[in-house]
Length: 461
Image 1: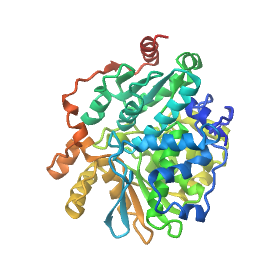
Image 2: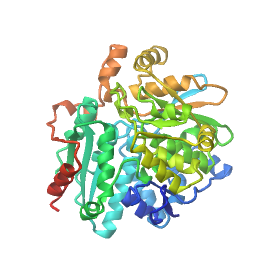
Image 3: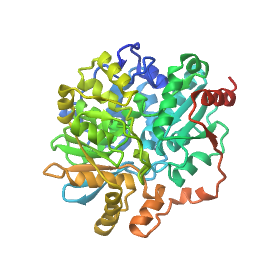
Image 4: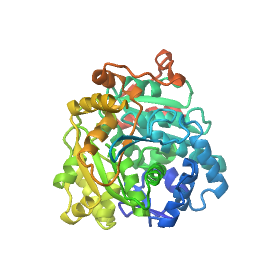
């Protein structure tokens, strides 16, 4: 199994190399050269298996010889041992043909734990073989950062720097990043938006001298291993509802397009998915792009679903790569145009995207109303991101079962939930002292040179 760049100018890599590299040197994102197929019989055989066993069967073809079968099984087992639900990703029925996939039972209460806990184990095992030390730099709109810190804190061969937009994450999200006491953890509050943080992250990767000096590695969803880990719960949930003998659809609240791109990969592998519905909040660039064919940034408007406050959706590049017939030069041209505000999607590519993806937008008022209504009708308390997903999904219900992804625990966004329901959701007992812990955070400017200097100083390079 080899991995190639969406921009066509970087060497093909093994799984292990792609995982440790993150962003390709031509600025592109790695994707598998070919997508492994699962037959109907193989998909049907997943029924009744544990989440870990399904994860092994779905992901194993992508790993190559980076890990042995036994190594990979062991790393999966470690990754999910700390989850707070035996099913790992349980389904709850909301109404006729509408189901909620709870992805918030991991250690930081967000869907990012499914990928981050695994990539933490995989990277640690890979580094143990080589004896190398790496510097992980991540950008987060809230959940990726805390999940990365949870996965890598205290490791002797890793330094973790997480950039988050100052004042634009929830207090729980911030404290999850700023309260770990381990010396290898560095929480950096950047002046600007998530898009600014993500842009500076990519700038660091594109400075090859700096990248090589600090042995830079990335754990954002630009990293293929992150996307791969998320493919698994599409299979586990669809099989629970009767796949492959029954077709299902999914609605995914998304800002960076990584979580829904994992669903696209599951579909490419043979999982019978009818529609993949992109649910956006008021920062609706993906909905506008799929509706009108114009991908144009419009400034980030802070919302009560801050993890989706994104205008540059990195993983959309992976979907465009396939929609443009895997033409790396065409993708490189589009990404150059994006630097000056945006681009038009060709008619053929747009038609290809629309055959798989639908989309919808949910306003702030609709988000709050959905949280209120779902609690009254079902007793289910949704975080604002999950509420965006449910509201958009309701406009796409039909004869095919719809699974909406619940991406975070409501207690991560207590202010929004309290506004909607009058009740303040409590953190799980293991996190009850979060507001009593002391914080460590550095305020940093939106400036590449200042960030590089800080990383060099903290890592001793």
